[in-house]
Length: 190
Ligand SMILES: [Zn+2]
Ligand SMILES: [Zn+2]
Image (cartoon, rainbow, N blue to C red; front, side, top):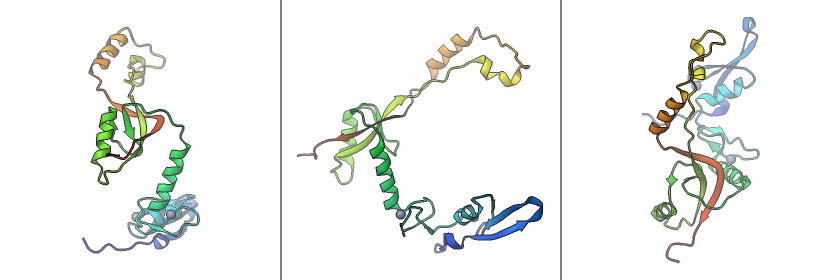
């Protein structure tokens, strides 16, 4: 690959073009020629292939690579603000690292992970309490609704048996909940 060409957001769009028949203002990406219309058309066309764009935060002059709308410091600050706003609970396991998909099923696992971090001095970890994913309930009426005539009633007498079977084979999967806590400990060795 050649040296990366700088594609500035501000220079990223062609247009506006006006086509009478469709009564829409059209912009296109200068690099891949994709067409964008609508209220955000200009922004979308500039954003499309750019790799040098302004940070979207007000009064921030940093540039981003275009993969994120905010520069790294702004993004970190936004995540901090978001984190601060969450109500916190006491530590519970299993849990998953906030903004990540590292799961800890026991406190020991979490401590071990903290020990393994490069700086070796991770003393706080933001965590989300994990919950077992609910196994979906099978209802034949729902499952076959597109195949029936209008208001057709399917025989649902096997639904319970099918659900019991599904429960048996469903894997144990976990997901983050709306409960947050910060796990803190003393410095290792202290
Ligand atoms: Zn493009
Ligand atoms: Zn910024």
